[in-house]
Amino acid sequence: MMWFNKLVAAILPLLPKQLIWLFSKRYIAWKTLQDAVTASKKLNERNYLVTIDLLGEFITRLDEAENNKNEYLTIIDTMEKEGIRGNYSLKPTMFGLLIDKTVCYENIREIVWKAASYNNFVRIDMEDSQCVDLEIELFRKLKKEFPKNVGLVLQAYLRRTKDDIHAMLDLHSKEVPVNFRLCKGIYVEPESIAYKKYEEINKHYLEDLELMFSKGIYAGIATHDQALVEGAYKLIEKYKIPKDKYEFQMLYGVTPHLRQSILDKGHRLRVYIPFGKDWFAYSTRRLKENPKMAQDIMKALFIRG
Image (cartoon, rainbow, N blue to C red; front, side, top):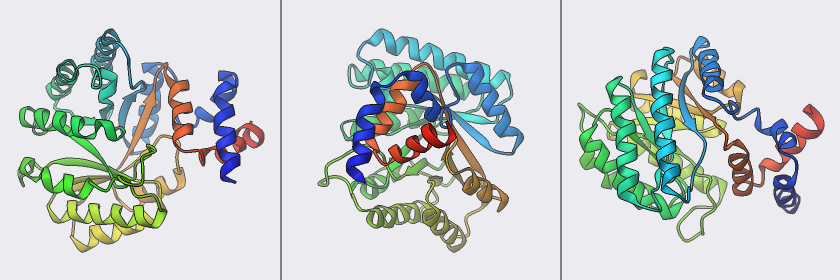
């Protein structure tokens, strides 16, 4: 089956965009800011929080970084004006991280400043392994200036993650805790730096989450895995974590029944809402990173479609 998934993953990016959209529309709020506003309002009405993500990463020119920064500033002003209950997520490679890290910092600092002016929050997404040290450095610098307004994503499948949590405890205090989103990780990395087996990744996910809870870190529990959700419930009970000191997080359109069950149990849940004109590149990149998605795409094309 794996060879079939890889074959489909290789062929689908060559197909017409509208055909790919049959699959992608379940997971992306479409192209425009108004689309993201509409999706956010619908989720807010059902008591979900949101985080907004403009699609686009690994840019090659700094003028693209400037344009992306300006789009984010508009996104923040618009979402606040519309009264959306949510915050913002961004990928540093959209702002020139791999071209000029100083320019990248200045761009993202302006975005965090804008969010902070509304007493809101920006999450720095973690990207592939070439970016990890640069993004931790970026987070450190921003956290010192905006202690309540910036957070970071950590990836449980990286062998270094537990050490990274320990290393960033100097930024943490009871009054102003650090805020980490913990996900499994999706980028294809060598076994020397990343766990590969499902059971192994889940084990380290829960170990990392337990470390975060034991230190009083605010945890964004980002998973669609029922086993990890159940494991998180046990840790929340073990450490008697108040409901305002953590949240579950899920991608737009993924495992809606599990998502609702978490909300029904009284936990906070935030939905990650990606949108933008780069939806096609986003979809095909994610497909290459995770060929198992090919099975879902085939169902979307030939069963739902």
